[in-house]
Length: 206
Image (cartoon, rainbow, N blue to C red; front, side, top):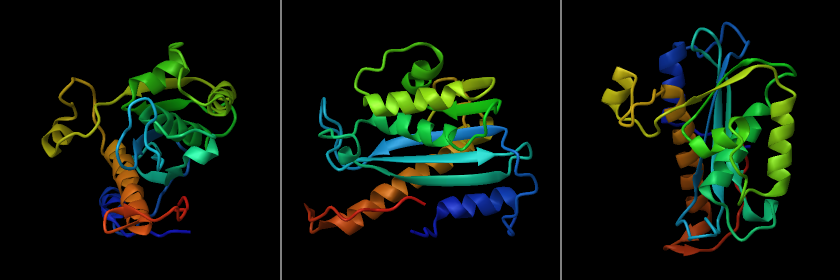
């Protein structure tokens, strides 16, 4: 188990108060994001893996729970993890936290991920096990509304509530991105020496 003391936790304290206490454990919104570790090779993705994170929020904008981790190529017997696979893995992890027949709002900055779940986009490049698992999670839920966010907003865009492409932005999406970045950084610290890969040393989820 890894405990990350980070700017992510600082954001939680700012949103929920210094105690970090959540007053209502009922989740009404979920946010997720995915990323890559190291360079993105065309057609393969990252040979090191991808990162994922989600944040679950109640009606008072308090964080009920959050988690993140790494999806490794050997988990799906592939040469590398693409960004789309990382995004879908994050969605799978998020949906898996919801009780049967849960209804609410899901936020992501990945149109292709949302399109695959809600708009009948194709699933090319997504491992069959991940596709099957994610769709199974989707089917057991109730009325889920998808919202597309602009990713990587500036401070001013967060204040305005709208990103550069005209979609909403959210501090909770930023927190997901921060968690992904921290897992990537942790992996590089543990697995690289003087710029050379010496791993793999597995980084656990939190």
